[in-house]
Every structure is written in structure tokens, then in C-alpha cells.
Length: 146
Length: 146
DNA sequence: CAGATATTGGGTATCATTCTCACTGCATGG
DNA sequence: CCATGCAGTGAGAATGATACCCAATATCTG
Ligand SMILES: [Mn+2]
Ligand SMILES: [Mn+2]
Ligand SMILES: [Zn+2]
Ligand SMILES: [Zn+2]
Image (cartoon, rainbow over all chains, first blue to last red):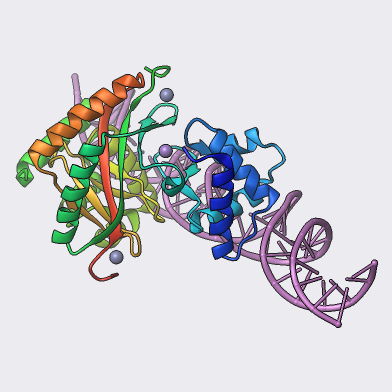
């Protein structure tokens, strides 16, 4: 987990590389994502930071995504979920409730993750692909929806 | 790979269990998915079966999904992709081109898949989840988009 | 065939997300 | 300080994939 000041500096740097300013609205988004205990939807983000305008939040989430600060998760639910990029946190995967849409983070053992990376590279190569990243999503029912 | 007549019977059975008829439109969808060399979008499906009405195709894809005949893949692109359910084909994963949206099927070694299943169950249990299935998606660039 | 139920398809509605544009904030330099 | 220019903002409108409606048909059952 990156310390806040370090995170702030890293975000600032990435935005600068893309000629983007680190404004109050963008800081509120980053803080909101950092404070959340998992990926959040846009309505959830607005609830936690009521001063954000919806249109600006969507726009800034898109810009932060392009700048490599934010990752957008697209699952079957109504809303996309957003989280801080893995390069600012750590590589992990997701547990998704098919009933309420809740998303939780999970981490695989380093050893298993390395085995997977190797297997994935081989598979992709056989199809002529070059892969940039992978996702592993576990679908099911959360403890409250069971 | 299930033979066509066997597939037809299996689809028929599942629809019957849900009080759904195996009509010409639904058969066209199943045939279209079977003939495709990977998951297809609704516009692609309509192109390959021009007599399908868009509204009926969407409705029937949803019903076929509920009946366990079709699986819907939601990635970042414009359209969802559809394929025959794994229970009618075999468990596999996806290689997705981030540039053109192409989706290809890939299969992991049985041994690795079993290792994953075990690890996933443990992780889910620790979070109070019960999992129904998992996805593994490899993102990158296909040979033509490289 | 009749009655009951399921399906169809053209049109319309929904709604998450993106776009528009007039306005504001902020940096820079003279 | 003020002027200038450009990036950012936000309220509302537009977009587009997908779902819904409903009157007309088709299919099953007996
Ligand atoms: Mn996450
Ligand atoms: Mn597939
Ligand atoms: Zn749940
Ligand atoms: Zn491609």
C-alpha cells in the first residue's frame, strides 16, 4: 500500500505526463477510490464525495484511466466499477457477487501467479497475440446474498 | 465438440425445462453461435442470419442464457459477445484484442485448471462467497493489430 | 378445430455513459 | 496587477446498446 503522499506524487506525475492538472475534483476521485474498501461504482463515488458533478466525474475517471491512474472494471452489472490502477497498488483479482454486484479484491499466491503468467504467455503466443495483462474474476454469491 | 444432433437435443431439453419452445429463430441463433469460430456480437449474429429480428434476437439470447444454452461475455467493447454455454462445449478462457475487440478461445491444461479451481475455492470461502464459475481473460493485441 | 399459451417484431423506452458549450479557474509574462 | 490563453467545470442534451410493449401470429394439446 502506497503512502498517501507518495500516491499523490505518483498521480501528479502521471497527470503531468499527459498534460493534465491535478485539480480538486480529480483529487477527490483519487481519495474516494483510495478510501473505498474495494472497487466502486460512479454513484457510490458521488455518494462519498457529494460535491462531485456527475459529468465531471465521468470525464475525469476516463482521463485518469488514460493516464494510468484508474482502472475501469466492466462486469455484467448495471455500473462499471473503478479502482486505483494496479501500478499504484498491487496486482490482484476480483470476486463478484452475481446478485448484488459487489466486487471484492483477492490476491493469488505469488507462486501461482507466476505459473499463470508463464502459461498465459505461451497460450497467447500460440495465437499470435502479445498480451499486456490478464484478469481473473470469480463469480458467485456474497455472504449477504447467499 | 458435441455433434449437431446431440447439441440440438441438449438445447431442446434445456428449453423444455424452462417451458420454452425451440423455434426457428432460436435455432438460427444456436446454429450461428455454433458456426462462428469464436464469441460473436449481436450485429455479427444478425449479419450471419439476416432473417433474425433484432428485438427477438436480444430477447432470445437472454432466454437462452437463462436456460443455460448461451453465455454472455461482457468486456470493455461496444457490444457484448455471445457463445454457446460451456456445458455444451467445454470450459475455456478468452484472449481479447484491445484494439479491434476480437475474442479467441483458449484452453488451459487440465492440471493447471484444477490447481486454479482449488485456489479459487479457498479464496472465495475466506470472503464468505460461494462461487459458481470463473473467468480468465488475457488482454493484448492480435496478430493483425500488432 | 378451439382454447390456451408462447413467440414474434416493429416501435418505443431506458439509462449508463459521453458530448456540448458557455462559463470559470489558473498560470504565465509583461 | 491586468491581459491573454488554455485547461477544467457542470448542467443539460445526445448517444447507443439493450430491454420492454403489445397487437398480431404461431404452436401445442386435446
Ligand atoms: Mn480490485
Ligand atoms: Mn469462448
Ligand atoms: Zn451480493
Ligand atoms: Zn485486433
